[in-house]
Image (cartoon, rainbow, N blue to C red; front, side, top):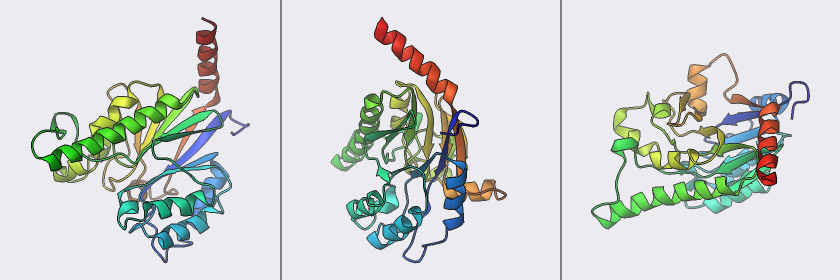
Amino acid sequence: MSEADGTVRIAAMSDVHYGKTSQGTLQSVFADVTKNADVLVLCGDLTDYGLPEEAQALAKDLTAVKIPIVAVLGNHDFESGNEHEVAKALTDVGVAVLDGDAVEIAGVGFAGVKGFAGGFGRGALGAWGEPSIKAFVHEAIEEALKLENALARLRTPARVAVLHYAPIRATVEGEPIEIYPWLGSSRLEEPLGRYEVHAVFHGHAHKGSPQGTTAKGVPVYNVALPLLRERYPERPPYLLLEVPRRHIALADERIVERRRA
């Protein structure tokens, strides 16, 4: 936590797409994160083809990050069927890789899940027809349930959701409309409305929009590295979000009052 301004500073980025020869390419970015943030959040597509060697290259660079790191995997990290090895390479250097799990850091709770596709609102794919369609929709529902369970386990006053796929349409706008259904699912939005979530981070949509809100006003940030580089070329490619300490303290007071009641 930053004692000077009374905040927890969260640096978030996604879609770093590390290859076998990528080691060192984000060294200056990670050094900047360490200097300016209290927590680093990585929202999936950490590797290019989901190879253990790619994850190891990233893991070596992350050893220079001297703050806690929270991550989820993305679709690229599953490409080669080595997602467990990818996750292990990162957990071996202290990264908290979440998959329906939650972790608390400095009074802020992080709930993480990859998420899935399926579309948004009235355009969301329904579980009707062929078994393959039902299986696809079931995957999206399972990911939403994992997110809900992770959020439910948190007892922290401030909660942050970490996803790869988008939970709302607004942050994928800018991509070709034909691929919207493959960029996220509004089923992921449903759990966000049942808990007091301070913010949501995701990636995946390289040409999307940086920010939107859920139907209940929760801010959602698309932190895909290619998007941040294109929109904000004058600054390092990560989003820095401050959670005011007073927000955490006030929520703590509410929890105490509920327990007394």
